Length: 401
Image 1 (cartoon, rainbow, N blue to C red):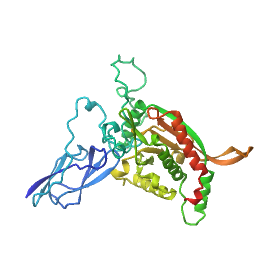
Image 2 (cartoon, rainbow, N blue to C red):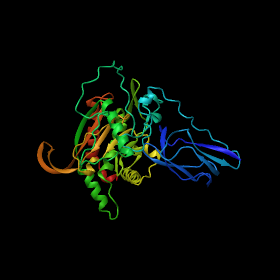
Image 3 (cartoon, rainbow, N blue to C red):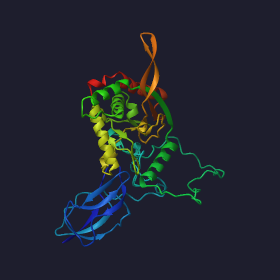
Image 4 (cartoon, one colour):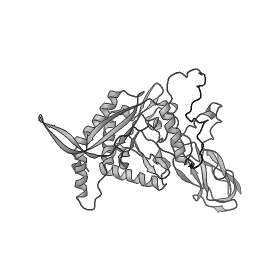
């Protein structure tokens, strides 16, 4: 007989911490290799961790709700024979005094779940494109400006701060943040305070897109792709031509990513999640629509895996689905831009054909993009948006859907 110490395995790129959400085994119970042992809640997803060995559970070392790191021992199992233990990630080294006061390195903004680590900045990781990509949410990249000297504490303000929180009064109701809401709050605050946001917008005539959707609908039982799928395909094409938008801020420069991985904001009953469509530039409109729908369904039914939440290089938020006509979204570092697709509405548009002007009713929607001014200038952002607009308006979508 031998005692096997089961440790927390790696469950995704940059994930180093999590919470024991559920134990499926109890001390004294038998278990087979491959059977669910416990559920690990990380920043964005919950993962069932299988037992690596067969035997009898002797002791559970971490209770439900306990925080663990990759490599931590969590349960002891008595096996019939000495087990061959595969190499495991060593436990993270003890954090320095400074690190204890800073966000734990690890995950996609825009989003939110278990209060697990945020992914390390691209500058702190390898500079290869695949390793520099990161899922959502992620911590903002550090600015390269020198750290300023400590300044006198500001005068007291009537605005609530972390040390001066509003307490519920008579007639008020307190609603505790979900894990996703807590993570979202932390990430967007870091991003807004650290990343110099700028906003650019274009109006897009969706006549060609709507005609293609109507043609698909007219084929019978075929479900037409949403307008979001057309925008995503156009964005993926444009990113291939404008790599600065598909990058991360690194140490004294940009890391231009080789893969184009689009993260899509999904509204769930727990908060915002941003699963990723990998290699989005390889998909047709139909393939894109299927990929988006599949991820959205997994997000809302809590079936996302770690790989679904990592590797995003550019984000899209479809606020038009709930009626918004103009949104200024917040960037998820280390990405350098996020695009909002807003509601398509009928508008009076001035047409110019061979010098003859006329007015027509056209379906028009805004594409608003927040971008990191460290990575690019306004002209770069404008050229990219103009290219997305050109692709959407000039492509004969009916021949490619």
